[in-house]
Amino acid sequence: MPEEIAAPVTNNFLRTIIDEDLKSGKHAGIVTRFPPEPNGYLHIGHAKSICINFGLARDFGGRCHLRFDDTNPAKEEQEYIDSIKESVRWLGFDWGKHLYYASDNFDQLYQWAVYLIEQGKAYVEDLNAEQIRAYRGTLTEPGTESPFRSRPVAENSDLFRRMKDGEFPDGTRVLRAKIDMASPNMNLRDPVLYRIIHTPHPHVGDTWKIYPMYDFAHGQTDAIEGITHSICTLEFESHKPLYEWFLDNLPVPARPRQYEFARLNLTYTVMSKRKLQELVRLGIVSGWDDPRLPTLEGLRRRGYPSAAVRSFCEQIGVGRSDSWIDVSILEECVRTHLNETAPRAMAVLRPIKLVIDNYPVGQTEEFTAANHPQRPEMGSRSILFSREIWIDADDFMEVPSKGFHRLTIGGEVKLRSGYIVTCLSVVKDGDGEIIELHGEYDPASREGIHTADGRKVKGVIHWVSAENAVNAEVRLFDRLFSDPNPDRGGIDYKQFLNPDSVQILTDCRLEASLADAVDETRYQFERQGYFCLDPKDAGSGTLVFNRIVTLRDTWAAKK
Ligand code: ATP
Ligand code: MG
Image 1: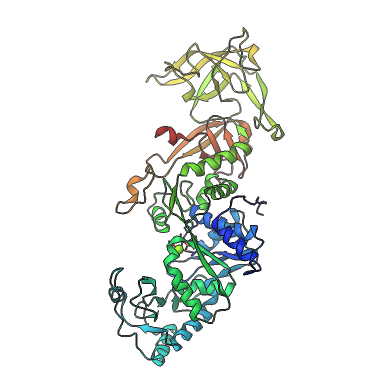
Image 2 (image 1 turned 90 degrees about the horizontal axis):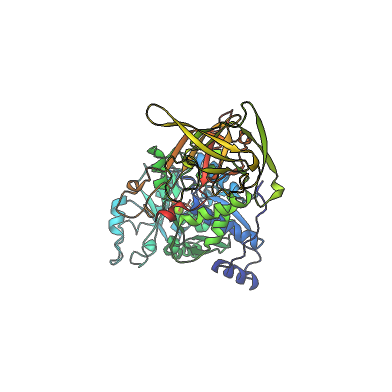
């Protein structure tokens, strides 16, 4: 069940409008809706819309509907419907009994189309799509009226009924509103209301052979559901006069109002469903839930906590001017959340063995390590120490560079929550590759960072005992694109794919406690980043961890 979500504090223009509408008595309560078309998976941009719509309803004591805007069976599937519901729930929102489909209203919408025909405000068009486009005119030139615009009402009624009965093939006729072919707003130049599509629909099966356009369905559905504030992204601003034309010209039961906000644009990714679909279809990513995608299923699988996604949406605010948000802001929200909540653990991602020659063969001992440095209530765990341990290859340099404070030959380093050790020699294979390190420990250094004789040791490294370490695969994810704006016009966005967006390490050694890791727990692997089990590929004795995010913004350093 969704966890309790704290109400946000920031104000925005939508809150101001709603506040006034409630105070003035224009509305007794508010009703919003989140209206996805089930033609793909939801992404982080949709999360913004979900947080706005469900958030406003929550904060003003109203309700928010989940409505599938399912007017195009050629592109929609049950798989998408299921995934969308799951993602909204994952984000922590609940539509209660208010789950709707635009297609639930197909009968009513059909009757309203017939009503417009009878009023002389709609006609059946025989021109094909290309001709309709040519007749529509341009932004600087008015359109030309179709020769079918003046068809008698009776003929329109008859043809429209026969369109509905499936008498005509796809694309042969459409129903258009008769508004104004010279309007400066292209959306008012006799917009198409209905088209013929002989494709079964995921929700209403093969009942219908004609389908309403988005514009003809959306506002009327808002009215039927009693939506008070119909909140959408700015590209619908030019559709608003049409939205209102339908409400003015049809006997609708209520008068919703449309408000627009700026969509979320995020750097280093793409969000158009068509491009996400293409990445999946071409196998560039493993599926809609690939942890590198900005889809909610992808972020979830990657290990992003939904609370971090919500706080990101809250932080970016709601405005009316288009802007870009750097993905590092999202990553920082994830870090902030995980820093507070993630238990610490030690994991050696690129293992190299260190043999402690002065530690007795067969002997082991246990250290106690806190699960969180600032939160004693999160408890502690015991960590095994033994003669052979794994350390990270990155933490050793045979010839140290300046400022390298980790292990070197003759150098000392503190094992986190363990002893101080020194490296004395290196064993190599025939190719000169290091096979293992040998060294000694300082028995007097069990606690703290001082040696027996009081020398202070600068470097602290993570490690695991070779005695009980568990093997794991660890997937290091990075940004899918190496350019901040891959989705710019005219250039194939795929040329900006980051060749290093995933690195798979198959021979990692993890502290024994991680053998019992559970799906929903996110860990900080000390000095490495935040990780969680891959919900799909981990299981039955196989440990597969995803890197959720690095400890610091490594891209900022690169720039
Ligand atoms: P398409 O038009 O390709 O189907 P879409 O992303 O607009 O894609 P919808 O299913 O229509 O898909 O979107 C549902 C709701 O989410 C709409 O109200 C839309 O305005 C909103 N939305 C979509 N993308 C974003 C975004 N990047 N930022 C904020 N809101 C968004
Ligand atoms: Mg859309």
